[in-house]
Length: 278
Ligand code: C2E
Ligand code: CA
Ligand code: CA
Ligand code: CA
Image 1 (spheres, rainbow, N blue to C red):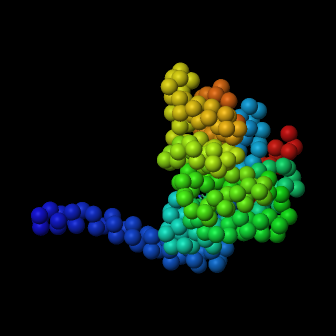
Image 2: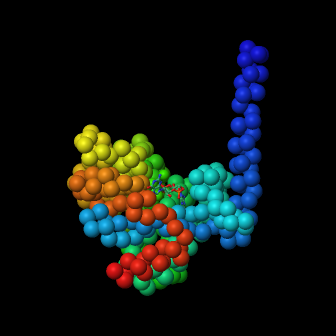
């Protein structure tokens, strides 16, 4: 047993050490990064599926280091959630998104989707923060859409249901992100009455025109959403074949590398301007 223990120790330690020190580095530097304005929002365009019209964008956070290197959210959002830094970070995202929306609305009607962490939704006062940013930038609640994952719906706490009903009363649309990958019961969907389901990329990537089974889950989600009067948006659409399958199923909207990657604000603004001109 002692031999085996030592072998395990030798095998796992370098990897665990590396991950622990990555996390420590991230935690130590993220605070400074926020103070130094190193975070930025990129925007990935979203389209109506029947006519490929631009309808909005999802705001995705990135960390631009002083040397120009871009750190992706997968590397720092989980650390921010564990350390509580997600609260100031999430509030910055909300404010920055509203600032950008107020500029974008001068060019075109758009809907900007913002990711909320479960930690943010479980903390009292989120609806007030959103209301504060909306009025600070003078934008209508219908110009935003707040994305939460299924796990948030299953939260039993009064805080979550109170926040959801406040946001709904304010007229801020709500979407379920990565739909189909969590464990939510369909009953929760009726209880919380969200506006949109975002079909996870894992149900989109395998779509084949010559294989009806490949679309079984996406089709079931679209059918259910329709009967509950919710919109659907397919994530991670990379090919024309996937696009055509989703169009045939009656999916409402899509986003993905096929029609547009996440891009810095200035590039998205250019994208919107070109769209207005055509
Ligand atoms: P998500 O909300 O599911 O965002 C979609 C992710 O898929 C983005 O990764 C996007 O760049 C990527 N993606 C978009 N289209 C395609 C495609 O066609 N193919 C493939 N392979 N990927 C595609 P990103 O930007 O690295 O974000 C990762 C995750 O980080 C997000 O997943 C979201 O959960 C989280 N995140 C990003 N920004 C924020 C934020 O402001 N707040 C919070 N709480 N979480 C955020
Ligand atoms: Ca999202
Ligand atoms: Ca997603
Ligand atoms: Ca995700």
